[in-house]
Image (spheres, rainbow, N blue to C red):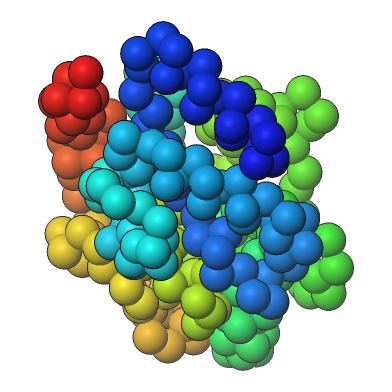
Length: 279
């Protein structure tokens, strides 16, 4: 993470070159509170805010994120996250159509800090297994190292050489097949500023996203056409298991929506225009 000294040097170098600094922020480091990695990032908050204050413009992935940094960001823009099809798409190998297997296969992936999010959803999955035993399973990639085992739960770890983002995505595309992508989100200040990037990731994998019914996953009003917003995780998951035809139809709508609305080509023009205006 950056230090205030490193930011000073960067700003000085850019100034000497007559260049503009643009800062891109995707997480609310200033609102980590009880986040598992709060201690790791707390010492860097001063440098992050210094970089924002010195920037010609700061791009935030959500309006709430921009609000949290409003005390230092004198000029900002909200730039929604988007996916690059060159990394995520494999035109030669089509993914299997979802909801055609003997059981519904669910995926939850994320960094190792998502234990509290999974813990909030877990009672619903335990209850679902009690009623629909053998009809589903859940694969965790990352999330937390201390998740208790269960008959419906599997753990998969990416290889050591798949840490870099493009390599991780390439490895991830080879996993499964899965039908549903799970995205629970605990009610915290940090999560309130989250973007809907995980919803996009699941769509890129050909899955039906089932996401927490919260502001983070309603940033784009059209996500209701391609995802299930779960107020009750048990009811939402049970309904998808029981009505796979409807789940399959909803999932099919996601692919074209993703690349038309939230691929990099959809936002590149706005980014280029803002950069050209700064120069």
